[in-house]
Every structure is written in C-alpha cells, then in structure tokens.
Amino acid sequence: QVQLVESGGGLVQPGGSLRLSCAASGSIFSIYVMAWYRQAPGKQRELVANMTSGGSTNYAASVKGRFTHSRDNAKNTAYLQMNSLKPEDTAVYYCNADISTWLRTSANYWGQGTQVTVSS
Image (cartoon, rainbow, N blue to C red; front, top):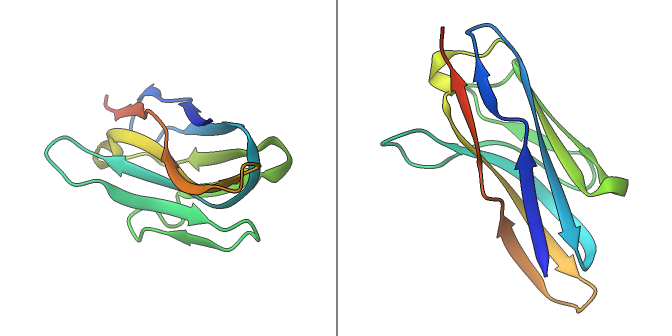
C-alpha cells in the first residue's frame, strides 16, 4: 500500500509564500517522477511542476520563476516552494507520483490535495 500525503496549504496574502510538502509512504522501491498539479474551481486540473528522480524539472509557464520544486529522495518527499503568490494561484494542490513497490508493482498515485488560497 502506497500513500501520498500533502501538507502546508493555507491562506496567504498576495505576494506571500507557502511551502507544500508531499510525503510518500508504504512499500516503496523507487519513485520516478514526482509532480504537483492544481485545480481551481471550475477549471481543469493542470500540471504545475514535475521532477524526475534524476532532478530534471519542468514548470508551467504561469509559475516559472516563482515556484521551486525539490525532492528529498532519501525521505521520499517532494516540496513545492511558492513565492510571489497571486490570487490566480488559488487552487487545490495535488501531489502525484510514479512509484514502484517492493512487490514489483508500478502505478501512478495521487495525494488527497491541500487547499491554497491567495487573498487579501
């Protein structure tokens, strides 16, 4: 059983910062890609950033230069540092990962999501 748990969301004023964490637990053999997605009310879920186990990272154009995605492979944890937040960053943020287990199964997993609200 593999589980992804996000934390760190909340209410922040425009221009502020938040740091999201995503901890993966369970019978994990290896994590390949870890990614952050977000979904705003009435909109489709969109990719924010992803990172391979080797550290190659991609960002959505809307967050490039403001958000930083990092990973601690030893802790099976990903982070999303969000700076210069804007009201349009308001969304539920989801962690996503491609994980293989010690049972030799591989699958894509989602966290439960954490709410980020940017408002004055």
